[in-house]
Amino acid sequence: MVKLQSLLNLNLSFSNLEGTVPIDGVFKNASAVEIKGKNLCGGISQLHLYPCPVKNTRKPRKQNASLKVILAIVAAFSFLILLFSTFTFMYLKKKKKNSRTEFPATSSMEDIPLHPKITYKELHNATRGFSSENLIGTGNFGRVYRGALPPSEVDMAVKVLNLNQRGASKSFLAECQALRNIRHRNLIKVLSVCSSSDFQGNDFKALIYQFMPNGSLDKRLHPQGGHFTYASLDIVQRISIAVDVASALHYLHYQCTTTVIHCDLKPSNILLDDDLTAHVSDFRLARLLVKINRETNVNQFSSLVVKGTMGYIAPVYGMGAAASTWGDVYSYGILLLELFTGNSPVDETFQDGLNLHNFVKHSLPDRVLELIDQSALEEAAYQGNFKADPWIECLISLLQIGVTCSAEYPQDRMNTKQVLDRLHSVRGRFLGPQIHPEEQLYTASIDE
Image (cartoon, rainbow, N blue to C red; front, side, top):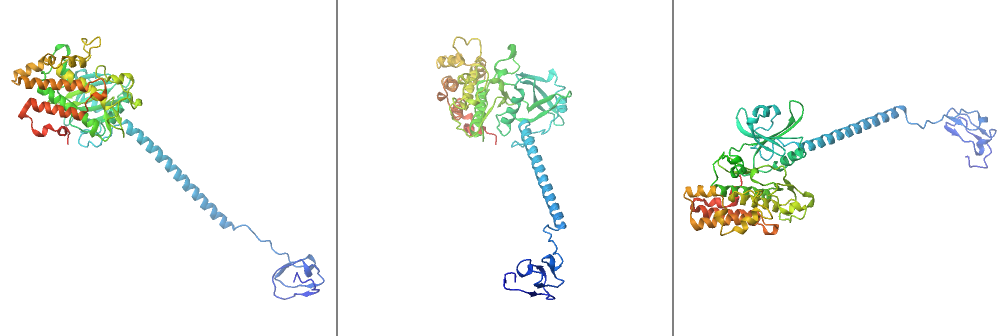
């Protein structure tokens, strides 16, 4: 009707219409329109209709309140999630840090930890207050005490680290990491560790080992002040020790999930148990090599430069080369020569370019009986084991293994598998039918 321009009059009274009356067209002339009705509103003022109510475009108050409650709940829930995530991250970070500083009470060596948790007080009592009477050795990073814990009273060796010595804490972590998942009959057994505080509140760290009643190989070969605490080792015993140490090295280099390089192989780190079985110890300088070629040349991995002991350390280490299995083989070669000659590589007689390796190399084969430690020869002769030429040939073979392993260049050395094969062959020829066939397999040395 608004658009009907020809419309002159309009009467909508009592028409039951409802809603807003327009203000255009015929509706803008009050004299032309007659509108009465309770359901109509608006229009021009001359029509005297009620104004139309203003529509409320805002949502009901109740709805707004509900929305606020929902938003508050979502915000609170998000905050809780964030808080939980933060605490979880901090806990995992702390746990990871602790796993680096403490040897786990239970590892893959389930039957080794006799005392998974040992306190400082227990160690203090077990060693009689770390008394001098219980002191059995000293080193660069601490002292070793003999002790026994009730109720079993099993003897143990407690290595207490001197934390004031630079690098002591690092050596503690290295040894824990190296020994965490390795197990072999010719490796020292860790019973537990202690990382705590002493009675004065100072940091205290100690490694607890299986006690070795026959001391170190070094004390057997070089008695202090000429005083013989132990009986001299005969040739057969020395061959067995050589096989034990080679078996341990072969395990570390080739049979561990992660290659372990000892880096400090020497007689003082070879310990002897009740029946003179040798155990390689002291892994404070050990290096773990993950996912690399185990035969890699020593000139690679320069970030793994190591230190060792003068006389036993491979020459290339002194020029900054990195740790490798070949470095351990060199140390083993020197140890083998010392084992059978009784001469230390740092003896004062080796001067002006002469060393143990060259001394033995230039004396073979003619002077082999002069090279061999005379105390071992006397013991062998006394037991009636001297068998002329075959026996001498075995001695020559043993020294040749040591010379080859301690060659200047890595490519001229044998690996530990070759060493074991040669040693078992020599032992078989030396002892003849006394050797059981299974013992000629180098894998028999693995602790199953």
